[in-house]
Image 1 (cartoon, helix red, strand yellow):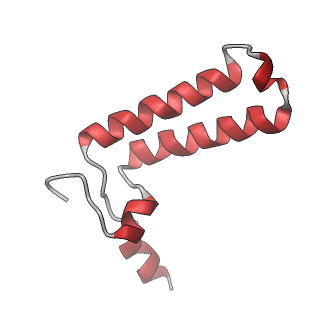
Image 2 (cartoon, one colour; image 1 turned 45 degrees about the horizontal axis):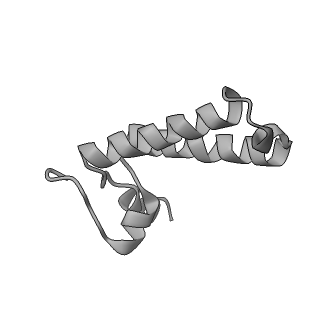
Image 3 (cartoon, one colour; image 1 turned 180 degrees about the vertical axis):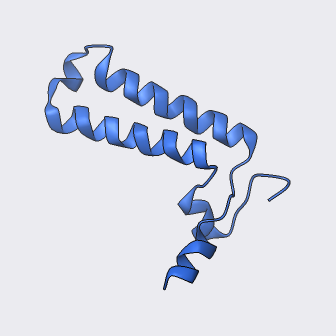
Length: 79
């Protein structure tokens, strides 16, 4: 049901959480592509970490964290 999906995807991240998610996402992307560690030479690990980093960064951009929606938590004052 589309209406249920729209209700579940409401804003629930505050400013500090958004900053932390963006920093973690950027750090994971940096680890995956820029640092050149031997640990991240395996394609599965490298691209897995990159995908997690992109998802974290996207969640911070949209101010949505699905686990908070499941647990009915909000870290923002005005949402």
